[in-house]
Figure 1: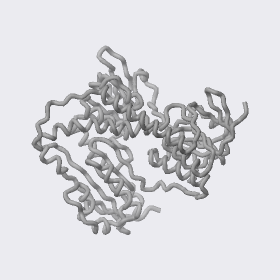
Figure 2: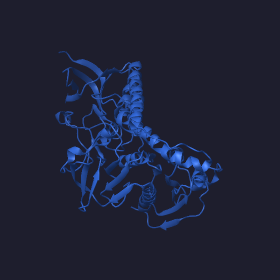
Figure 3: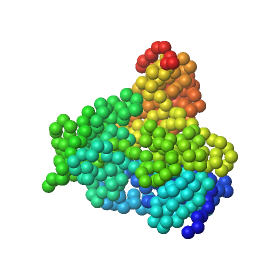
Figure 4: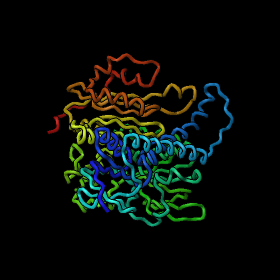
Length: 461
């Protein structure tokens, strides 16, 4: 069978691969994308997008409760899980079709098969056996859930992938993990009426985030009835008549209807043929790349979660776009991975950008901290026991705001805009010079005047 020659072969039809393919084709390249599952990748099919739809659904319970404080009389609401999942699936199918249509309009060829590398320039489709000779190859296969240690009963555990397709809402669910996915699903299930237990091996949830954010979010989640157990791990899962009996490392046990592990995702590199061509891996287990996403093999590149750099959809998209512009548009663009804003769609939301207090104190000679905690205006008439939290981390030498941390309603929306200011190296004085928009929660970001703390030390070498 003769080889088909292409300028670019993209393995993986997720956000990063699709963006790279479209932009490269727009620059005149002949491009093929291979996707073995569904076009759109983790984010669109079983990640950020369906998760956010379920987050919206989970928040209605509080909205119904809060309405009474504003004079509304609402009949006792009922929730139907199958309706939510069916409507979610319909929207995901629409988005998948949109991704496919956008590629077709860009004149990108799509093959719905698994693709593997035979050598640096040869890509083989596993099912059909067809081979392509590619001038350049882009690996954009993303990540895949991993459950950690092989424990007894691991076959009974689901990941976030299966959580989107459960036939019914579990009355009781135990979730192991303390990061984005675990905590977001904890909020989803709790909001929809499940009894939720979170088990995490660390001393507190959201490892890597600012310590004040971690503490505040835990308090707020526990107020909402979510049981959080730290410094423990699941040691075994046993199927019993009433569901699953889950044993913990402290020898306690819980009986629940579902057990979900959200202990992280690994780069999806298994059986891609990387070893056939000598593509090197980095210390984090992802494909090692330089600032232009080039691997150790000169014509092979990688973007997104498969590189295990910053595993966020917008980062993968930016990396894919920069790759295509650099290789086919002649622009030589390197992606700036500093000060990337991110949101955790828990209840309440978390939005962060820049340095935590700990990181700032370790790298700067002087650090000033400004922070506030307050009851959201909407919670007053609703009589809801909740508080928002905001924090600014400032370089005390230059007055530059180097970090912003928010926990509260619409934190994700706010941090996107604050991210612009921090990227532009705005100072605390410039924040202060901005007129407040009243009454809003965001006005607190420009009205914090009193330092909560100030630290002086020798700058790190």
